[in-house]
Structures are given as structure tokens and as C-alpha cells.
Image (cartoon, rainbow, N blue to C red; front, side, top):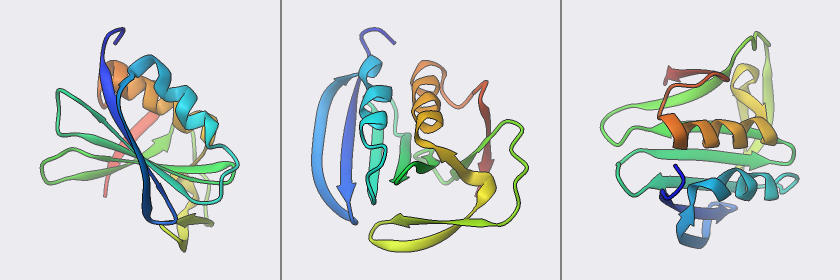
Length: 132
């Protein structure tokens, strides 16, 4: 992971705001954490060596993490031990969206998931990927 480079696309309110290429994988968790508290930001993180894309939607202190495997499947991340019922409202792409609480993480957890994904792919000590 030390020399791995990634691209981070940032969308605000559903509109592309910026693209950063050649970002060190070691910097990604800090980039994610920097958006903590923002109302409607989606980060699309991709590695140079794969078609997979990690999607992190930040809505205030909350985040939703998805994984597009580049083929035919999309996955949602569930934190280990999370058995919460109900839904939580997040603003994603300019729209208020009710998401099952089991898929909602804090931004720091989402940053850690991104870090693990960059180090080891879809295996995570923090939880599991559930096919959507």
C-alpha cells in the first residue's frame, strides 16, 4: 500500500466538484475524515490496478459505504456487531434518503473501511460487505 496511488472524485450535492489523481493510499483516510460534518459529499475512490470503486457518502457525522466491484455487483458495508433497526436520513446527491441504520457508519468508521479496502480488498476486520 505504501506506493499505491488512487483517484478520489468528490461530488457535492450530486455535482462533480473535483478529481484528485495520484493520491497516496496512505492519505485516503485523512481525506475522508476531512469531510466530517459536511452536509452532502460523495467520495468515489478508485485504485489504478482495478475497476472496483469505493463509494462513501458523507452526510454530517454519518456515512454510507458502498462498493462497486466493476462487474455486475454492488455491495453495502455493515459494521461488525451492528444490529440496529429502523432508518436514518442522509442527504446523498442532493436528495434526502432514508437508509437502513445497519448500513450507516460514523465518518471515522467509513475512513477506516476505506483504509482496509485499499490494503486488502473486500476483506475487513471492521464488518462485512452485503450484496445489494
